[in-house]
Amino acid sequence: MILDEVLSFILKNIKSPPKQETVSVKELCGRILANSLKSNLSIPPFDNSQVDGYAVNSEHFVMNVPITVSQRITAGSNPFELEHSSAARIFTGAPIPRNSDAVVMQEDVEILNEKVLFKSRIYSGQNVRKKGADLRENQIFFHKGRLLSAADVGMCASVGLKEFQVFEKLKIGVFSSGDELKQPGEKLSAGQIYDSNRPMILSLVKSLGLKTLDMGCLPDDLVQTTQLLYEASKKVDIILTCGGVSVGEEDHIKDAVEKLGSIKLWKIKIKPGKPFAFGFIGKTAFMGMPGNPVSAWVTFALLCRPFIIKSAGGSHFSPQPLTIESDFEWNKSNDRQEFLRGKVNNDGKLELFNNQNSQILSSICFSEGLIEIPIKTFVSKGDKLNYYPFSMIA
Ligand code: AMP
Ligand code: MG
Image (cartoon, rainbow, N blue to C red; front, side):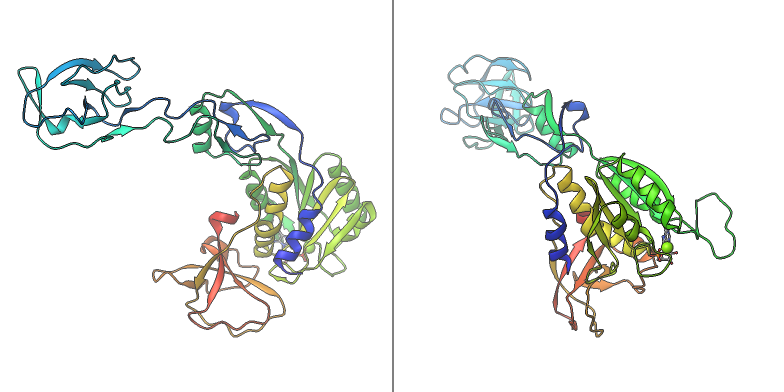
């Protein structure tokens, strides 16, 4: 299976959204809406001035003649109707008085004996922010399943809503695996390496705003792996592992999941990422990423992330690629769909990072996106390819 097929297969296994809870506007950022939101009022709620200046009626307006200033309108005040042939001193955000339809910036007027003199022409609607320009009354402005950003929180606050129904945060447990792994700070012996995947995957999950549980490192031992995965399945909604899902004798994770539950999918036609595994232990979903750091990162970004977002109640989960011209040639025909690391260069074309080995994590650090090469495809300069900017997938 290639990306679209794997995604549609794993996403179909999501049965029901999480439970809901109520949160205040202060706790809203990064949460997923469980209800669509409707505005009970127009935003802005009234026509108001965009500048500090003078409110006038454009039909009665005269240039270069001193005009009386009949009232002073500050933000938060309630003005009375504009007297005929007068202007109102007005400040940014203050309501436009009835019988006026334009505001002249204070920089564009002259003051003569407490009267105001307009030096240029005006038009109706000038410097007026219209009622409802941002949101109309009764407009549904955010749909169920939206992951709320900081600007979204501002929007929610602007309509005066105080409490919101959101989905409860899922618990995601992350394991690394392998007897060769030491933790940062520990001393390395011969043949050992530091565990880079677990902190990396934990960080990727944290950026989704969910509860992350660091489950430690699984040893290369079937009995212990089975026990630790069983215990984890009682604590979390989704278990993520990296390493130990390939075909070697020291890869025990897939066997352990099969003992405890079921493996629904194993091995995919994606490079990097071939040994990716997916299954369930009871109701807890299991996603086994490969151990090579780039493979772990890529399978997390393309597969685990959409699965986690949809499981968490989110509606925007599928990665959407851009189509961009290649500035490189690719002559290696492959029987897997490849996701190369690269970026858009100064000519606006796709360029590859110089090392595409799946162990070279710097290929992620110093790239800006994944470039998709379809199965059995040679690429010439100028060919259009799918590009997944990291900002959209991680
Ligand atoms: P495995 O799939 O367990 O055979 O791992 C494949 C490769 O990835 C091996 O070279 C491992 O040492 C390496 N690897 C596995 N897990 C990690 C990890 N958590 N951090 C860094 N490298 C890892
Ligand atoms: Mg291993």
